[in-house]
Length: 201
Image (tube, rainbow, N blue to C red; front, side, top):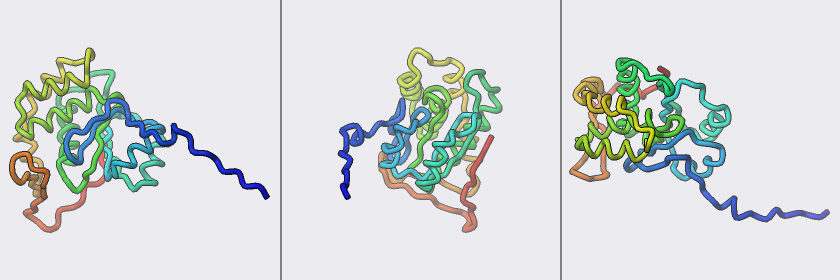
């Protein structure tokens, strides 16, 4: 009985990241919607969670990939074609940030459809939490949004109250150990803090 061995092609060795992929910081990544051709690359990130910022159902093929790799999905339905009201956008970004700053969810990938506006708003608000100056926040937003930059997004980021997020973190306190350090930890005021469940807005 003849055994036919399939030779490995060069394409099978290539890892293809999703469109607009980038590292936000250690353990946090951003991109556009991953395609099946990106799955092998995503596996190298050892993701625990994905934060999905679109209202449309997550693609079935992507759901199967998440299930096979034990990756949790958190969905926050922010409209992309029409501008959401400020209150709805604020609520969705606030809830997404609660998942994002909890290091138990890292490594985590944030994405919308193209990785530009909705993802840019979330990352921009994270940067404010990290005490970035507004000019640097906008420069990063512009780098990914390109010619499709939205003034409404920038105004939202500028007006986002970081203090309100800190008040909404309940008993979870997120801390960096030293400026620029990669070491982080979560401190708890209570022992019965529940693990965040899948959120759909």
